[in-house]
Structures are given as C-alpha cells and as structure tokens.
Image 1 (cartoon, helix red, strand yellow):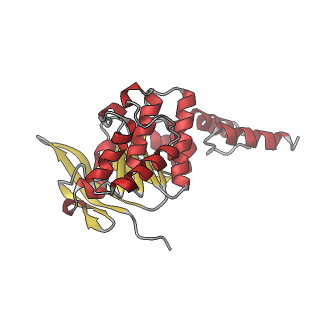
Image 2: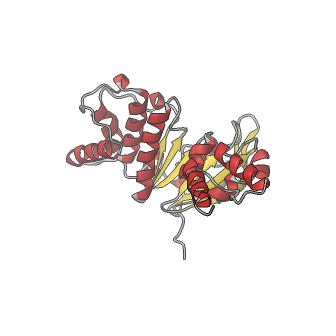
Image 3: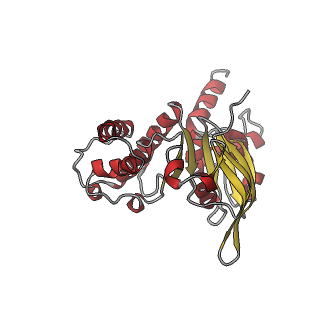
Length: 279
C-alpha cells in the first residue's frame, strides 16, 4: 500500500490579474521518491503549478497540502524545508559574495546553528560535485557550476521534494549529462524530483512519471513510457515523442518486431542486438 502523499493538490484554480485563469481544476498527488516530468507548451500552466507546490503561489480556489497542511497556513520558509525550488536561471537565485554565504543564507533564515551550517554547506557541495574554494565569487562560476550551486543551496535545506525548472538551459551536451546524473543520484537517494522541461528525450531517459498540462488542465498523468509513446496524446499539447521513440513506432508500423515504446538509444541498441542474435 502506498504511503500518504507529500504533496496533495485538490481542485486548484489560479487566476492572474485581471482575469487570466492559468490553472483550472488541477488535482494530483506527489509521493516520496518519484521522478516526475512536468511538461507542456509555454503558457500551459506548468510553472504556475510548480510554484503552488512550495507556496510561492496560493490557489484562487482549491487547496494544496504539504505534509497534510494547507500551504495558506505555512510560510514559504517552512515549506522550503520540505519542497525546494531551483529556478530556471541561476542568476535569479544567486546573490551572495561567495559560495559559502550563498548556501548558508537560507540555513540562517530557518535558524540552523552556525556549526551545523558549515557541515551542511560542505555536504551539499559534495552532493553536486562542485569543487571550488568556499570564498569563490559565484558570478565567476561557469553556467554549469552556477546551476549546481543553485541546486546545492536548495539541497542544504534537506527538502524531501526538489523542483527544477529547466535546469539544463544554456548547457552543452556534456554538462547536461553531468547535471542530470547528479539529479538522478539525488532521486536514488530518496528525494522526489519534479523536472520542468521542454526536452522530451531528457524527460524520457530519466523520469518515471509524466504529467502534461494543456491550457491550465492536466491532459495526462501516467507512467512516462506510456505517455512518450502516445503520439496522438502528445499532439494534443503540441509535443512530440523523442526521436528514438518515433523511430521505434515507425519500425513497428512497418512490421518489424520492435516495441513502440522504446525511449532511449541504449534500449534500441539492446533490442536490435537481441534481434540480430536470433538470425
């Protein structure tokens, strides 16, 4: 039997002034140690929904419960101990004079003792593999290092859930793989990861559950493999499956014994290798 959800979203509506409804009756549960892709075109409501999960926004109607408590009754600082949010642009999150102070800031705000702060700072930097002197000015870091610092700042708060808004923006392929392996390791260690992304191949490779928003409503909330192999469903929100999945669907259509729901190049290579051995 599944445990109680960490986050429960109940029939949430949200209106931006003057009368723009960004969310329309959204309901979902978020559980411990899930890796979730939050998908949709620009304006679909995914970032608005994500900001409800950690109290940055509160519903116009409906409610969001974090550990059973309505977010209206909790400060953002208290919610941040449970649900961390890493913004798309690390420049919007980084402001301190050095790496140490950047990570320590949030900890001081919630009253963590100074002796514990140092341990948490070092632990968070180790988790994201950021090996720089603690007095380094964050603005001298590379884009990839800034992304990792932003994650470390959230990680030091020891949240159960980490929301990442387009964390690979501005990174090359090598840096994307490095960052996603760090994020995946956090998931394997017990964190719930919510990944907001436009990169369908990336989401297909790492996520186990996919939620697609369209015009402020949930179009689908299902296992990632089921979602990414459904061309018709994705087309409703102007999304396309990963290229490798399109290839598997086309090969299957032509009569080859290839499953329609292959999500990664490795899966395709393994399947083709297995088939070749039978000939």
